[in-house]
Length: 173
Length: 182
Image (cartoon, rainbow over all chains, first blue to last red; front, side):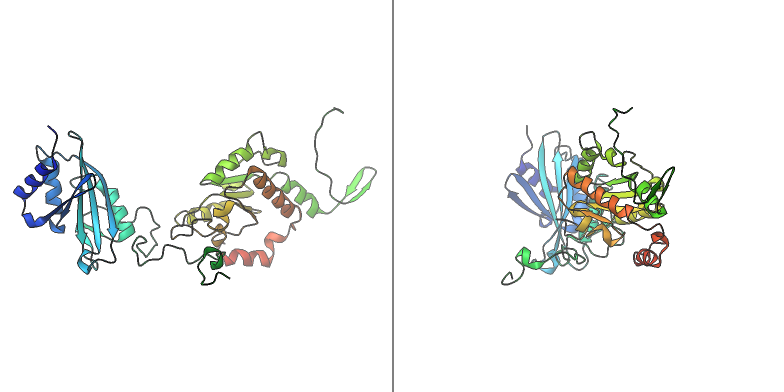
């Protein structure tokens, strides 16, 4: 018998406070918004429960929503995969804009170690309890978190660029 | 032996007589350096693939005295930077340049090495001339092997006409100082 989304929902609600979750079906993937302080407990439960068995963390990444209210500026997204029933779910946690921090899940899924470092590198989201939270892809000297929308995408040091050829001037002359 | 089609470079300008040939030391040294430039390929992306074709039999950079690819910076004369250099890579490129012994020349192959190319972004170095001095720029994305060969030939012209004293001149020291290279 395949694992149904209603089953996942019932299991979670039965074991946690119902206010912890917000369930939605987004296209083909069942998505759960989780309160940020409950994420480790929820992941541990999803991994170890005998019927749920979400044994594999496919992806972990950050999102910046500058338009959102200040306590929902950042999101961390977890993609989980149950290999036995071949079911995937998505967990989303919203974080505060001024001090985005969340507990690390690298103790539950060791594979999240580098993914959390990457998320820290690009969004400046702090993972509390991470064994080695430092930049992974960008140079150590970098002061910005480049995927945050307030930082410019383009390099300021470009000298050969003529804005006229990129449609960036008003009359393009 | 008369039937062999050995190509030789022309002798520099000088005075020829019976049993002697007199010319300038500058020209002889330039001739020798220009026709045995040992390349050090610093290939990070697609321009490096074009360089592989340049080195292979069809385009054959060996015809210009550059068959000996040196993977040790200490023995190389010509640093060929081919591909996107990220900012994280820049100190490594700089270190490789610093490890090369004088005289040393640099060719920036392709748009990325010359100016950052299409990667006008926070993580990419906007041209290697931000960290090391460059002698020849080869345009293209990626340039064809003919263009790379042309770049090497342009560099050969520079090398031939370079004064043997250039590397100890105040202008050159100033150039290195402007890049903060000792």
